[in-house]
Image (cartoon, rainbow, N blue to C red; front, side, top):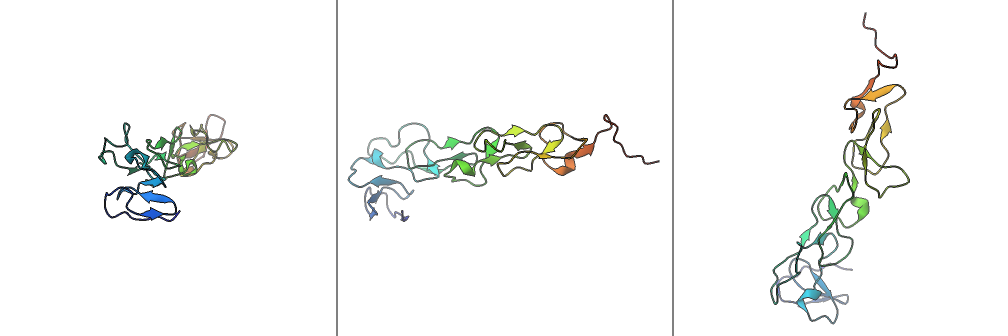
Length: 167
């Protein structure tokens, strides 16, 4: 669908590909609609909880989804929160795939849309992607033990007999 910038709050002022422009905030309504509540927020935006509009007023405008949320369809709903330990790289996301693991967290390769979990000892994840935590290597541990964010957190374990002799 082609986007159109509405220049006044007059409802249904302009038609675009069977959609009608409702407000300057980018709301659209299906052709033939005559109710203010038929105006929906575009993809990647949502409304605060409550009524879309008080009678005859544009009182609850659409806003781009904040970091950590997305809106995959036009609606009068709040944006949907990303699964646990996931965030979006920019506001206004419109797809669950935009939600990626935060640093120190990973997701099992077969469950890319699932919540991310903290990396265990010996693993790390830089964040910004939906991928498993990366292994530091045999015998390595991480500091911190859980949620390491880079290979710089990996260290040899003296408990299993690996150490550096500086003498």
